[in-house]
Length: 155
Image (cartoon, rainbow, N blue to C red; front, side, top):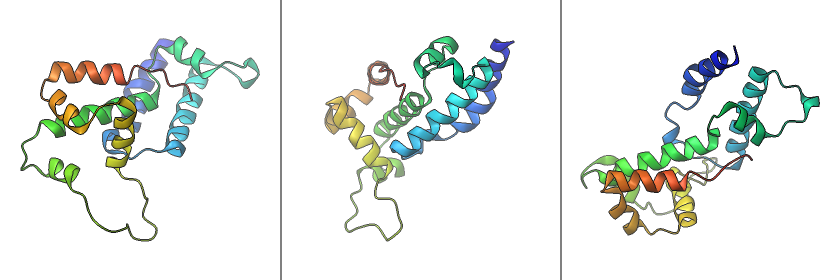
């Protein structure tokens, strides 16, 4: 019964939740909301109550589902690989390399998709040139993204 519920969660709820997540600009607040939502869903599926004091790590191990924040990061890096392999005349690559001058208007978020990727790039220790070179070989890029997103994320 639990296997069926987990399959439904993965194929329906999570698929809708992660739709176009590769284009999201994430921050700590959004990541915490995603973790909280997934935690509530999985604890209900498993029938765990708050008095049981089960950790997020244990829930993830029981369900064998990759943490949702890790999945968003993986999708974002896979999309970056697609962008870096595009020809120089394609709009996504132009937008990635474009550096607008001035400040954003009042009320607009300070961070962008590019700043999210930039902070993760710094954590990875790679330069943009290294990433561009690595992305040209799909197999190597897949290995790099797998290693980058293999770190456990339990909030």
